[in-house]
Length: 451
Image (cartoon, rainbow, N blue to C red; front, top):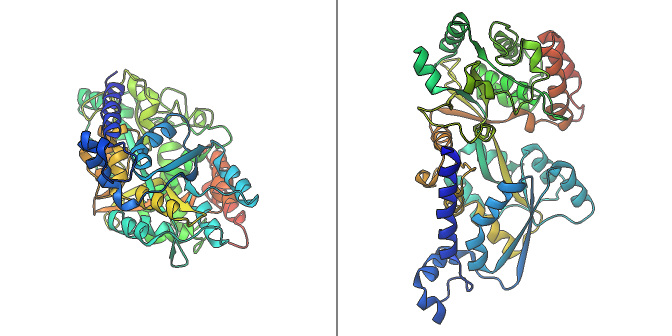
């Protein structure tokens, strides 16, 4: 229960702060404010965003359930102090529904895009409006230049980073490592040597699951992406994503074969589920769980995988489960970090819409959101002490480490027919026995001719 208790305590504290921050006049004093000076003082933090009477800003995104609720709570003070009613609509079928709304002439004011490629296509079609100057300044001041670049299309800045998550974590059990005398690896060679030692000790060192309904196969693409980045560097990675080199370039072949050293090795996988062929039928949500029972040593997954563990599991650097960053493969490349994230862009340039864009791109919002948990930002200006989760603090440090080589999830940047299509399905065939050359060749053949 430790993890949930920590988060819920932080949520309670954050809710109290939001309640104190609540005001109705955009920072202007009146008698009631004088009687509750702390409320008006907190509203002063939102004064620069202006005050709007009966203004509504419609926002659409892929956050649903608890994540959506926590976001709503995080900007409650902004709403009360500016008079803006932020009406958020979350849709689990976001990618198709946002296209429907835009094509019907009913676009939301602001969209929180989980896929950069989709945002960029709306910018190229002329549907998006450029971001306000203040939003751009906030992004450039707080985020890695590569992250800012993903929101820029044809030298025009449209979208600021909203959230960021480290995808290239390797999950493990600190208590199991301590029991067996294992050391967290810092290089690829050390990780392979550790895998060999675990196998010799009678443990399957890796567990993986690629089953995810209609999205089955995506966990395998994460492996290829991080190993291409780690082995060949950011420049090659960018060319691959942009199709300036073919999908079956020799660098991608080499990276995929490195993945095969682990995932196609029955001495290494699939702890708790079977041999390597069981990866296809193992749910991605279940894949890391054998770490807690000693049936599996390691699992590649994003920091958000913390939500997959039972509340009784102690997620801590010295606890039942934790994660380390993917190790260095090539010394000339440095520390590889693949990330996912959300970006905010607008279909309207009304003043209240721009005020919301400025707010959610700011350090102010990052600090307002952090205490509620379940969130990580790579905004370097945020107060990391507000982050309640140890793994999220680790992610923040990795994202802001100048030695980290950051790149966005490649499949989310590619045309959908490839990135969320053949890349997924062909990797399933690969894990079941297809050769690397055949697999990558088939994906290359599927790349749209106009991209």
